[in-house]
Length: 167
Image (tube, rainbow, N blue to C red; front, side):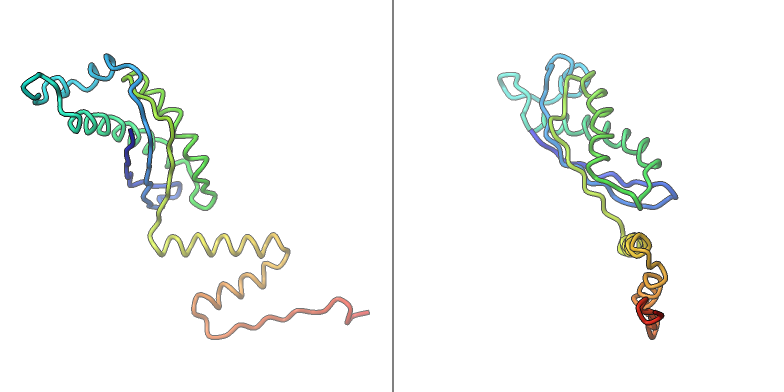
């Protein structure tokens, strides 16, 4: 079975974002699961005493979503949004989530993470990334001028000296 969760998060430096999770899960121990989701046993049943599968799935998702949110809120404040790697977040969150879920008879078989920031934050992260590219290429001054120009500065003046002209 599968589910989704969205967690508002604050990254290192109090940078706000939304983390969207898609996951697939399975119940590995029905007795543990029912014991941990007690409202399932008090849910309405049909005339044969069977709990509606939709109720069961909502119960599973609510347990999973709560644990994902708790683990994410503990972990994300340590993550620098400039160096964000969604695949690393998946691994770093999946292990503690599964540890807590196993106690409840559930395990996530897969999890994918998508981090969204507001437009201004995305632009700031793009600027930092672009500047680092220029810096690593040994031309940080040009990078700074390009970034200034892209930020709405009226003109761009770049002077590049040809090393062969001085010989």
